[in-house]
Image (tube, rainbow, N blue to C red; front, top):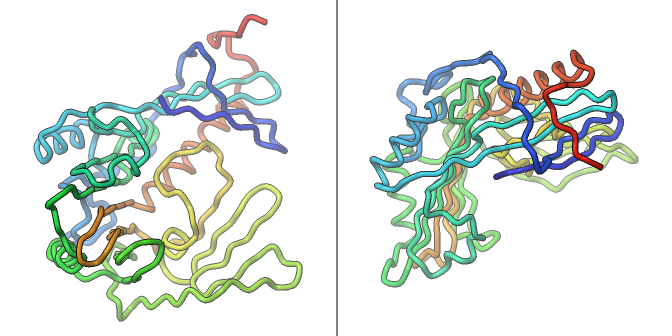
Length: 311
């Protein structure tokens, strides 16, 4: 079970998990967009056929049919409260994993033949639909796959990447696919330089060639200068929900992104990591869910159906 415990200064809101479970609030959907919504029909945007916008059953069935493996659900469970005693219990399926996935650190997969997948899912307010997918393939003895061969296989399905980064953080290559207004951007249309950050005196804003990063007392705002820069370079965790995380990304042109990290020696990779995320769907969900929880807190004093711990 995934749990969150957090205190937010200034608004006196606590997200915590108790040993008991309260009746969880189920929010009515405000978005039911189907797979492919907002993307050009000719665009390939999936991992193993699993697409953002798929239902829970869609995702489970596709994993079963493509990987021939059983799945398990991971729940996000929390009890959010404020200083007036109002409480909202949150409990929804946030991830689908393989039943065989123990959740151990990826370092335990080194030198083994392992294929893992995690599908990230929204709560009921976004119709419990898929937001994005991560997949990790680790290569065992005798599985000599070069970076060139892997890159060609990726390009056969997804096309040429928007940007290629070579040889940093132990990676042979990082392939970045950027989708703006529903279409894949070509390398000719997208040439980030990642210049060093520049501080303007005592300004809390750091300026980069791709985005600006502004820190204030109650949060952080990342403003894109080119599509998806905040998501690709801003160091934001894109898929795991965290209530009221105080990070705002200003980027109306970014539809989604797909990253492929080829890790290890170019002549024989250790592993490949894939991350695909529908950014509009994911951040739309975060905003809608946070707002619904905060609205529920403001509309309630104490909740009689929420148990209190014995002191």
